[in-house]
Image 1 (spheres, helix red, strand yellow):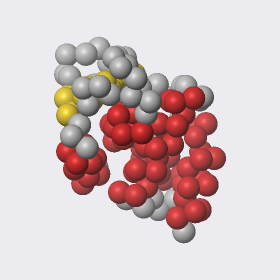
Image 2 (tube, rainbow, N blue to C red):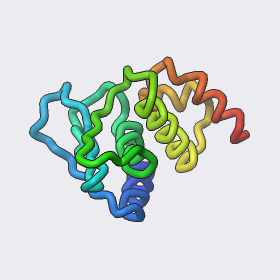
Image 3 (cartoon, rainbow, N blue to C red):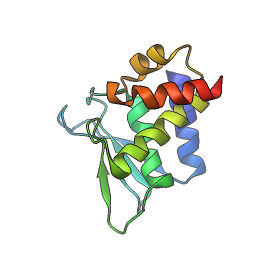
Image 4 (cartoon, helix red, strand yellow):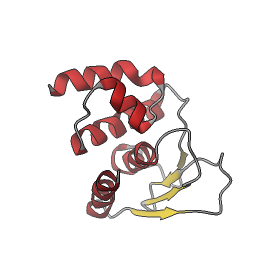
Length: 129
């Protein structure tokens, strides 16, 4: 996992994005990103998805999102529409480029990706074969 996080941090540096771990947050407080400031706030205690998937998702908001002035985005594994869905897909693509999964199931389990994204993961996995 360390090498994956190093690659995500490298992507952040290349895009001038600052990442902060905020250890004082409650365990249910999601990560967030602020596109105007190019800032990602990560909650290491949040466990609904892997840290790497959540970080890739928040980076995606800044790199590929609408970048509305004063917009603050919070991670949610439940939103299945709109920009949140698109950022989930960008995060999956980013992680697949960093480390090719051995199988769809292994990828889903390793990153704790919500099951409703399995069709997208499978399609991307097949496309990369």
